[in-house]
Length: 321
Image (cartoon, rainbow, N blue to C red):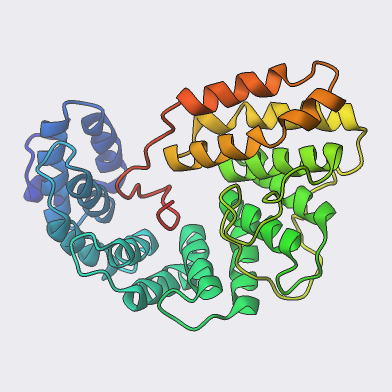
């Protein structure tokens, strides 16, 4: 173990040993861990600067101080750390420790994207697709979402699915939309899981509610940016369920709906439950078990509080929803 929790000792410790020591300390009492993180941050350890900034945002082991968190992210960004760049974008996007500034948020997201961070790519693509702080450029948004998806970024895969479903820039293609939603679902994205189920139910029943398709901002859908013309992808998903019989589609939809509450936000849970209510008549008419399984899921959605989004988790924040 390190002899003392000060920046001098930290600077004399080999990086490999320091990483091991920090892992042990982070697993201990939060107040002690926060003191060690601050010492490491002051010693110039970038990962410590990032985590300590995160803790300052969340008030974990230390008093909540978003303005000081921004300062630590700035320290890490000067060393070119991509996550620090992304976190500065988050702070400007949401007004954490600085005045809310969509233009500056897009600036930092662009730098994070150019540094190769998948979350930076996602956040910058979202800004481009929705005109948040910068002019709308949907073909460019396509490129960044695809780059992030190629790195395994599940939320970007879900966004690509939305573009195909809505026909933004690319030709409308619900088969490809379902493929991308399924890949996002397998990656653990709750919107991808719900959208997969929604298209599978639509496949089984047809459009049973006026709001099922909706706009790019349908409550049951992720906000849809736009994509450039179609081209082959090295990680293009396989057609898992595009033409299965009705009952198989229903069973697959129920499988994905069961997973949504594990990570969905409270607001999404409420909107999803409302949409599922519109599917009950069709489920009674078509599904072997009637609507009982769907009703059970709806009840679970309505009583489940959802998963509160952390203040700005370093490895998991998209654009605030």
